[in-house]
Amino acid sequence: MKSLFRKQKENSALAVKRPLWRRVWQFMWKSTLWFFIITLSWVIAYKWINPPTTYLHLKESCNCPKGTEFRKEWVDADQISLNMKLAVVASEDNNFMKHDGFDWGAIEKARKHNEKSKRQRGASTISQQVAKNVFLWPARSWIRKGFEVYFTFLTELFWSKERIMEVYLNVIEMGPCKFGVEAAAHDYFHKSASRLTRDEAALIAGALPNPKKMNPGKPGNYLVRRKGQITRLMRMIGDGYFERYNKEWPEEKRVKEEEDIRKKIDELPPSEKSSNEIEEESEEIPVEEVIPEDPEAEATQEAQEVPTEEVVPN
Image (cartoon, rainbow, N blue to C red; front, top):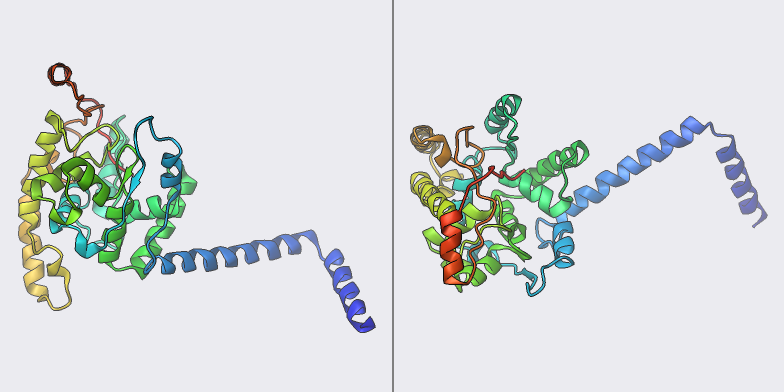
């Protein structure tokens, strides 16, 4: 027992004698090690475990407008309509199945645009939006962006594309205090996510850049136009979009179909491409498209509807 006490005293004396820089260095590398252990375990766990909540869910659940119920319902990937998956690819991320989490072409276009325009544009992929919504907090800062890059890399490394899409469509904000496609499908169209039609899915996807202001169940002029653009892109991409990237699919056939689709998309006017492809002259997203219940008020709003600056998700 005495030898044990003596050893503890010796260790304490050594700790006191250690230079400050060495103690700081030890703290830093231990903290870094634990950071990687915790974040890696977190991401790997969510490969199989559905995220129970997110920072944004908690924040919004405490700030719901009076009379608005907080809605969040999880559905598995096979219970989500193919139309919904294609709609978000068409509207948000045309290269979802091809990139490694970052669409470098879209990033370069956004950089060039932002250099010469006051209207800042993002180039976030679906993978980046999953990293931001599941693991981080909604803010605009270089620190948060750095963490977003890190978590995007991890999700692409450990998750399948199907899992990324499943989580995205279940955690993304789709209306005031409304999260996930199942809640959106029930509230806007009174059906499950598995039964969404092409037009319904396109309306939901079209409202994603500004879900608190646009109502897919009662779309205004802008959202109706955007729906047409998204459904056109969905037809170009084709119902076999996800199947083309299966290992069994012949490489030459996939490459040829990709080239044909890209040529068709490149021929479209900028305003009809995905939000990652939209050019400077694209039409702008209106500030508000939540249609009032009163028919007279509805007519007045339609007459006064004025589009303003486009909102592109980061």
